[in-house]
Amino acid sequence: MNVLIAPSLLSANFLDLRKDVEMVNDSVADLFHIDVMDGHFVPNISFGFSIIKQIKTIARKPLDVHLMIDKPERYLEEFRNAGADMLSVHYETCTHLHSTLQKIKQLGMKAGVVINPHNPVALLRDILPDADFLLLMSVNPGFGGQKFIENTYNRLNELRILKTQVNPNLLIEVDGGVTLENAAQLAKAGADMLVAGSAIFTNNNPKAYIEKMKISVA
Ligand code: DX5
Ligand code: ZN
Image (cartoon, rainbow, N blue to C red):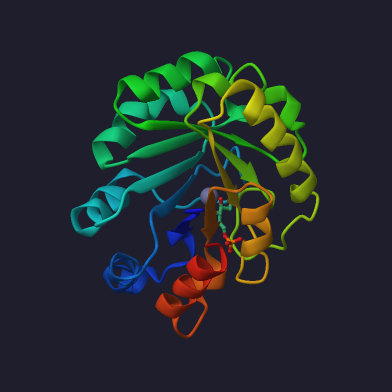
């Protein structure tokens, strides 16, 4: 099983961002997870195109950009131009989710759908065939460092069944409250990609922590 590890730069040190990007480059992590927040769909505001563009100039792993913004269809091309390789949009923010996913793929990116903890995963049945990946929020979106919601395991079980029925190639990503303590259990429950922010960046040795996570899910 090759479960991908995606450190979330939301918890990086922005005064020394190059150092944290290089740490991820030199680690066994697979992706950079980049959280974009608009202060409207979620209460927090993070960063936008110019920072992503700069990260892209030194990143040696794909950029997995998670949009927590209303009407994300307005900006798909800009995020592609900024360097996104994977782009995910919230189910809750898209009136025409099907066409938004098609557009993301036409722009040459992997297309992902994100679902909040309160929404039944069964809502996704008709859209999963059009998605490359599904991001299951395991906290309420907006902030790093929150407590993992245990019901995520039930949701993962349901999703795994849905996946075999409608899109066996779908990758399942879990985001929020992921640590070395729950990574293996999440992988066993069907997660293909794990996002971790605070657990990695607050650790004294983030590179070794990523390695331990990677080993725990192997
Ligand atoms: C939360 C973001 C997450 C966040 C995860 O809205 O989508 O990617 O960075 O942070 P941790 O791992 O600290 O819960
Ligand atoms: Zn995220």
